[in-house]
Image (cartoon, rainbow, N blue to C red):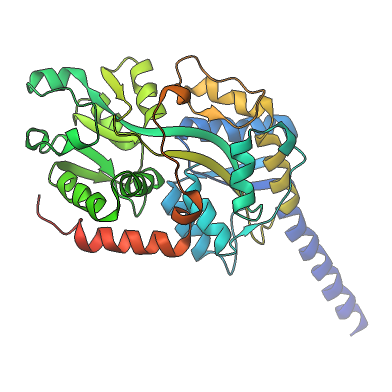
Length: 341
């Protein structure tokens, strides 16, 4: 009996050590930026720390839904990238962890403001303006006028020529919906979305997919963040970038630590590292043209000039709330998505 008890105790100790070792020096990293940027961030952190990173790339809306679904048994440690609205909603729902990084004094005010509005459960890592891009070759081939405003996209000649993501899965598309409502008011904004729906050829899952389709010549116009359109132009595709004449919304791309993360120490290490100059400068290696949140990080000379764009006073608190997001998405589902095209 004594020998059996000792053997059992030894087995339990070995099992405990094995479980502890399985979580040691590892990080489960949910990423909602472009694939190349996600990869360079994961590998960069591994090189800087020796911590193994398991990275999964999904859109902002998909990642938010996954973190919510896993709330009872969290599997992710840190969520990096994607529009700030779902990060704010996750914070409001208690799905993310409060953390005050020692790197905060190196950040722009807008990044700190994002953190403070969420009870320090998220923080700004980059910023970018919303707009669209179009394929100049396809525009000419179809004898279409050059668009320069949001309302231009409602013209009947653009039928089947416009693509955007689905706001249920894409943070970019939710920012589009929230921006249009703030620019035109809710009633007129939803009339705009109905008119736009008549010209949409496809609602994609990913926010950047519409401009990639335009770059490949599969669609003419893609509604995206302007830096994603710039990336296609820099890659050599015939894409022209548009900052809409009425004004436009913008994102504060964000980062959050998952509540109850299994690898909390590693998550905080990543959080601090991701706010550093070295980590944010990695964006330049993969043609990510957002404005970084660290004041000392470099911004590409090809990035959209935020100072020259007519930006609205985007209400991140209101449109980053869970109830408002649910209400607007339900209204879009019921009033817009069901209409014939």
